[in-house]
Image 1 (cartoon, one colour):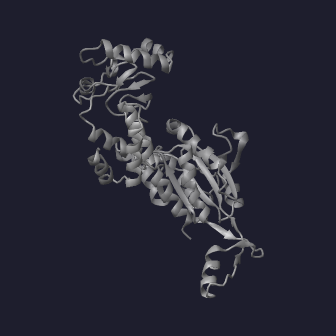
Image 2: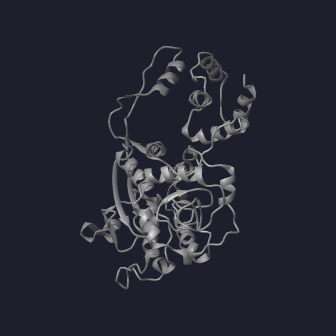
Image 3: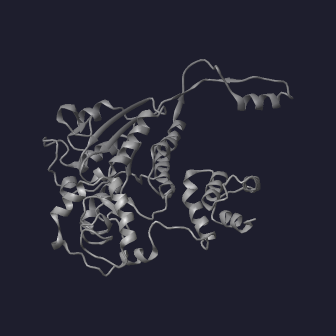
Length: 398
């Protein structure tokens, strides 16, 4: 039954064994799917998918194979076609301040309920306005509009104000090229455990590999071997961008902070914050309060060179902030701009990477300049599953 579905899953890289497939057949025979199509989907995903990173790939295979099975979509294709028209022009002159204030007063639950009501009522395309599902207006549903919050339907992300995207595949965030949650951060950070040293103590830890080898070399007579214990020697300095364009990534950065703080993979950990780039002071709190700060010179002088440095930020700012000398140390012989401070970190710490939650800006050389300048100086990796794993490998390089 559904043998072609098995081959489709394997063709798309999902490693489904015959044992797992037969378990699915047994589950169907015992009616574990509740005789429903939705139940069948959940049973398949439970038995055939081994990692959350493969949920999205499984969903695409499932939709491809069962595309002819009728099921209710959240947003109709006709409505999507209306909302994805590229020829509709934006009209900022129609900004409605009253509509913006009304939108701010709505809860997410109220917006969800109103969207269902509009889709039942709406039977034609709408652009502008503040009531229907459309584009370029003040409505809390649609895309390319000016509402302070709402649900994006169709189109592309522009102002990053939507709290949800209608019709989006539910498990897309688990793909390996997408951003992470706290648990995935913790899994990726485990790679740093490889960077640990042998403690200078008597050999008291059972050495399995050498015990087997020596026993085999000794004609099968057991010869037990011990080794010195291994202790985690990883020390991490986490420097995080706070405020401005990073506000959009605050939830993601919070997940990273929680994962790093709760992780037992580090011998020592310190966290400081900066805004846009590292300048003369680093802050102990994301609110960037001066009373909770230290000078960058102090950090460079007191943090030893064997520490691993992880910058987290979108690397986007006005070029003069990075290169213009407006945020120097105030000394003629000291750093004169943000790039000078980054060069000091890069020169002092061999293990130094930059994790970026944002993609490279595509809307002009001016806005991508600082991104490119920092990426040329410090190895930069996207804040995704694959990106974080590659970054950890870079830190492990001796």
